[in-house]
Length: 173
Image 1 (cartoon, rainbow, N blue to C red):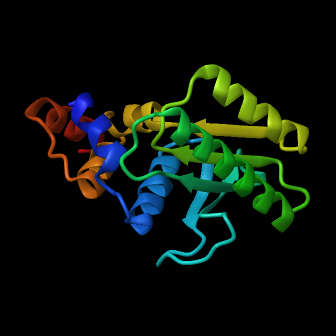
Image 2 (image 1 turned 180 degrees about the vertical axis):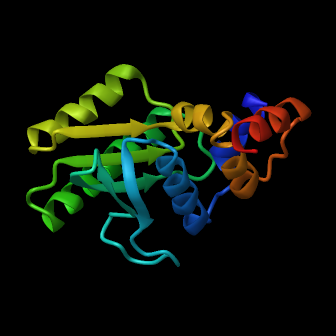
Image 3 (image 1 turned 90 degrees about the horizontal axis):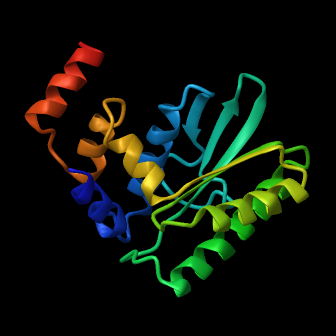
């Protein structure tokens, strides 16, 4: 199932920014460190590069941005595009809240640990204390877990196997 999830994350939601943002909001909501997770512009539209707003560890306003590309293939060109998108969205988030201390970025491109560390370091230099990057693999791991099965089904149209149904109902009743 993980192969199918990975493939769908690359291109299934091409041109559907609304569903991309809604899926990422739902993924973030599964992370217990975040509360009050919501879309900033629930029907889509201009949001100043801040697609999601949440509260990190019950105290810090967090902005989240979604940077997906169509037909994701992890090429150097696409990675360059995503790194620029990260920088632009981070700048937009900081412009909106000069005291911003938490930022989360979602992408359907797989980044290396070094690439993610470099982007996180950029955020820290701007005064952001907590920065997390959920690339395609991290999103896939969440979607292929009992907490993410319903999100995967809703946004990527991947049905649950019998084993997944058993683990889902064991967890959620």
